Image (cartoon, rainbow, N blue to C red):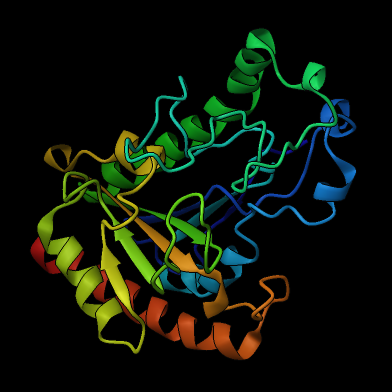
Length: 269
């Protein structure tokens, strides 16, 4: 099984890579039968269709990597030791989760949940290959341009009470409290996102997950940003069906934001 899909630029490359770690829906045959069939019918924690919002990326010279496996197999945006990303009593799933965001058990029985050996196997076979490929993409672009931006693309349900009681804003730009990217790039992204009609937060309630924090090293000219997006911006209110009319409005904002980032990287870095 291929662990990820890479979409290469269709024009002159630019030093930007988009990572989509949570839009995958596949399960290895050896463990697929271990999961709750009812919950598998609609993988509730999946960032459904979010990669489609970035269809414009190759035409701007951007490389896109999308994971194929479900985050219930391995969560690529969690610490490899499952160290919590936040300490504010929100529900935080591990890199090999046993529940969904609402606390529902995703395995048929407890004895089918991954033990330490199985967790380590998944890290070795599914987790680190994705990281190694992202690192290779970063290294290639940095060698070519002297700097690189990794954009980690996510979406989340309109409301998840186990994380916060209030509905989420439209968009949340995360950079671990400005530690993972140059302020010029952060400002360029924020200014363009906020110029839309969408409500945009910065580092609240998400600061960027493990991918953003792991790869971000602005002192070494490696910059990372995470965009969390409310699913009802591009899906129907039931958060199941892709809504082309809504999605097209989001794409306009995203494409404009990336054009601004490209110009900023060319002139200010």
